[in-house]
Amino acid sequence: MSKRSEVSRITGAVAGIMVAVILITGSSFSYPTLEGVWAQEEGTPLKVALLTDALFSDGGWGATAYNASQALKEKYGLELTTVENVAIPDIEPTLRDFADQGNDLIIAHGFEWGDPALRVGADYPDTKFVVFTGLTNGSNVASVFPMQQEGSYVLGALAAMMSKTGTIGFVGGQAYPNIVNIFEGYKQGARSINPDIKVLGQYIDTFTDPARGKEAGVSLINNGADFLFHVADLSGQGVIQAAKEKGIYALGVVADQHNLAPDTVLTSFVLDMEKAFDGAIKMVQNGNFSGQLYKPGLETAKGASGDGIVFIAPFHNLDSEVPADVKQRLNQIVQDIISGKIVVPERTEASS
Image 1 (spheres, rainbow, N blue to C red):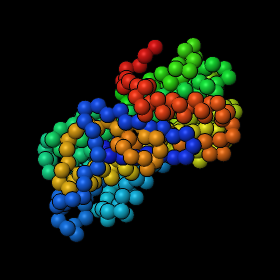
Image 2 (cartoon, rainbow, N blue to C red):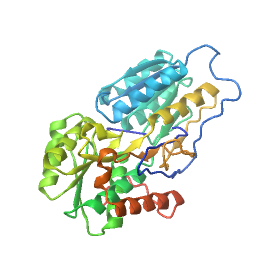
Image 3 (cartoon, rainbow, N blue to C red):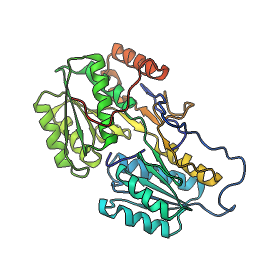
Image 4 (tube, one colour):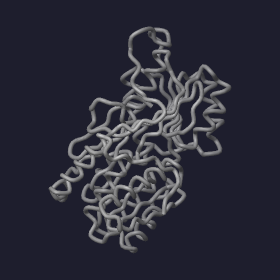
């Protein structure tokens, strides 16, 4: 997930073990009703731009956002523009360019878009901005910061239950707060099962280099890790490849990454970006956009009621490889998160 940030009232899901709970701090988020007058004139398509420093071909962060935007373009008849691979120094001028073009809503997809969105938003009060995943907000700038640590907690617990070496690993593209938060959840989940488990991690400072990801994955495996988890976008595909070649399991992120390596990716935690973006569009349509910081968490399954947008993908063809007692315990962990018995704190600074 590159420099990422995470709006909406949403749902998440899947068959098999699926996770979710809503751990919302600050303000709750739910879909605005469709009653009342829309913000734009009837028959006028909403003008929306999806802008990101990620790649739409990364099989995760960028690809999921692109697919969500295309589905919503068809659903609402949006006048949609999508731009990928924006260089970090070009974020602010890119935002200004698309605000100048009269976009009603700009989805700034990546953590590093937060502060530039605030600066640009101050100069374009009639344009609405949503930063996904972000931690900034203003009168016309909202951020979504999904509580992804709830999903990664479950993955950490799963890895700890199935690890044979007592060592698991993760690879991050960059130590951004949202990514640190994910890995902290992963550590907590693993240590809830085995307090003595070793959790090894590397940040490789790139989201677009599969070779670097593979190198980091191999290094972790050589140090005893028999599970690899990544939050590294395109670089993460190299991590999965390392796991495949070494015959261990990998865990995916943001999208169900099973198809990248069907016999290697045991499961993933998934973000339902379509539901998140849908909520933002409805707020603009209804004229009740609110520049808040939204923190939706996990849900039990896609389509479940509630405001969460994080869920766990199924095991697919690897279902028979997961022991029944592991599934039972994992399901109990999910229910304990939902009920609040297990609270997974948000941590944006790395622990030892």
